[in-house]
Image 1 (tube, rainbow, N blue to C red):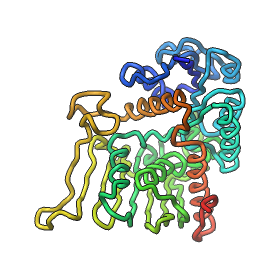
Image 2 (image 1 turned 90 degrees about the vertical axis):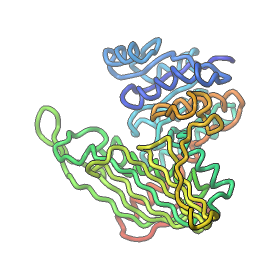
Image 3 (image 1 turned 60 degrees about the horizontal axis):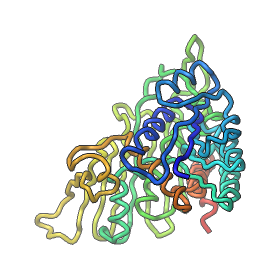
Image 4 (image 1 turned 60 degrees about the vertical axis):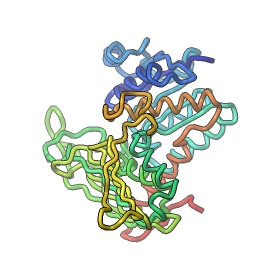
Length: 379
């Protein structure tokens, strides 16, 4: 097999980002499998047809189950709200289709466990699955992981992570599915805290083992287009501390009401002999402190992560020509296609997604019970 037919479910924000990635991965990365944008599935034939024409998909289905019956589709790309992830992924894997599923993996631990079981069954037949934590593929983040693994900051002691947005700071911001627990699972917790938990664990190689948390909903109801209001049943903000399996202390803050902050994912890792700092709003930069340097001149120094030997960047532009948010998805597709062709397990796996889901569940439990909660599945 030299090509893989892709069927994508959903065509809103994430669908657009994924479509851009499927279009660009072949020309820039030349993966061993060439993706073919075979079909897009959406409930409205009119909207799905318009999206397919705009985004480059060859055909349209109004029932995602039809994608599973098509011989020209070998990979299902799930870009729906969280309430659809488990059903689609399990059915696709059992039908022998490779699966890429957007984060968070599911809305509940039980759903994520069912997805991991399906992934295990499929793996025995050579069928692969991956969850889409795209920020792992920011070159600066991957470089940070490499520096930690190489011992450049010594023993990790502190992890500080924030994800600050303000698109819900205005109480008149309209209600959407992201504010409905039944569809989204949670608010800032699942939407953006899942990213900083995964990114922090990816960079450090540590795993969270317990948390103490609080959640807050600052605006309890929001206007509905056409009149009236709807109750907000998810959190606006999540704040929690944690401890890792290697003894590091961690703090996490995720909010969609941080006035003035648009997409500030920030990670700082302090070690026994150095430190690293990253901010997504300057995603081509990594700040590095070498504690072994002379104190008279030591300090954080800026690394512009655009050199040919930096992760992923050599496939794009000359040094200093910066990359953007959309490139992370292209890197994700390149890694997935390579793993499928090589017969290896792509990362992050559904099992990785389940571990994040267990962290989110522990945070919610801690906030509700006002106590420290150990994270299941870490034994």
